Length: 448
Ligand code: PHE
Image 1 (tube, rainbow, N blue to C red):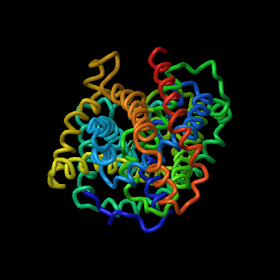
Image 2 (image 1 turned 60 degrees about the horizontal axis):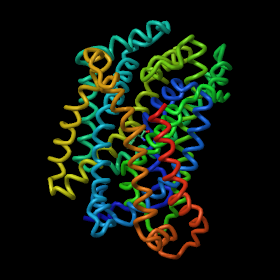
Image 3 (image 1 turned 135 degrees about the vertical axis):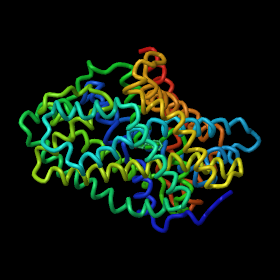
Image 4 (image 1 turned 90 degrees about the vertical axis):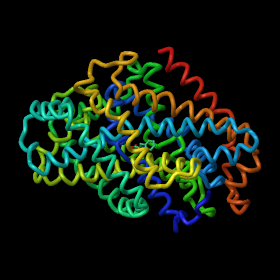
């Protein structure tokens, strides 16, 4: 089923909405923790390289598929795959990815809600760095609070989707995301003036390739996909929104630039503070939550900044959870003919059933590991480092080798009305560079 009423009214609107959907915990929570675990500067360089060489072409690819098919992930491959129904499996892989990502993402989104509450009640005020870390451990290792906050976030997202007000949220986020950006700038100033800040800057910007492993390269690729919501069909959905006359190269480039800037800014806030407060950059998923309260505590009106920051981070997370749930709901409604409300409730409950294992991974289920990883870490790794790159590989093979070239050219040149000067380069990247690079990176990542 197509729904053209979802088109945006301006190209800047489409860019901001898709950028709002892409910017989220991936930039502010996941990027610093991944970079910290992979030795710093070299990871940043590799990450940026992947965003430009693979991320932007892949985003264009998803937009082409979405705008052309005007359909949900599975429907897109059904329509464009013609007789070859097997391609629909690639859509199903996207659905699985959305389920797994949503399962652990909602945990971290829940943490954000908890930090709004903690900031509002002043419980983080004036704490020493050790006490800040202790507060996080006490909360995240609990047996019910992480579940309650996760559930609250799932319910909030479900409500937005059921009431069909995601457009409203996207409008609000268009205003709020620039505010988040400015807030990050202010926080940068504070972080950079802490004593010992330069060590953090060195860590972030001075590449030491000796610290990079095959796994690290794969994680940089995975991070670029995760942050840009690529390789699982989220951007196919946004592609259905984009107007026929918008330029896909321009749109994709802008989204990638905005998204990476937010991630780098987050790094400039976090790492000087990590070193100034004597913390471990490789601290893992809690990094941002144990570092930032120290930054706020060293700022005038820090408590207010803290409240505003965590509220905005929550909204950034919400636009991402909306796009994750929308993937599941659009599939259930358009392919399985469910009612929207029912689809949203059932999908959210399913996510909660799996996600509860992730929420408890830091406390009661800490010892419950699969391949040596907690359920949280497993889902996080599995989706970003494997499912998204594999999804991306199959997607570029689909559009580059299976779908007629004329169709791709038609979509990128907006029905022949644009010159699409870069079509040759794009098509070369799509057909050769992206698949070969993805295969090599995956193999290197797996063997070490
Ligand atoms: N890109 C989002 C973020 O950075 C996460 C996400 C991934 C959202 C995949 C939707 C699909 O927070």
